[in-house]
Length: 135
Image (cartoon, rainbow, N blue to C red; front, side):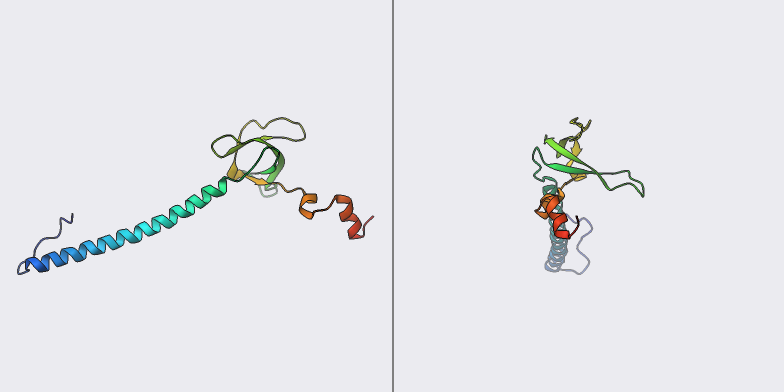
């Protein structure tokens, strides 16, 4: 296991075995620390993958994150309607204005839920204006 360990001159068998045990003990401790670090890493990765499995249902509206954007471009475009959710963490989207499906499926890491403003406020648009004092 440790080829560089050999019995030194004047060392008894018991001293040699003790020294071998200490070296092996250090090796086991380092392996345990490494495995603890690896376990934390994989817990983080599993948590990330669970975050990708968001519960989008057909009929939900989402925004698509723009990947190659310039300084003045918006961060997201949409909203799009979820048609179905096939395998591999993707969704099929439809443009609600034209009714056409997008040519490609979109990965879950690139979409975000779209919240209609009236739903977020819990009121209709007319009630918001009347409360604000505007006509």
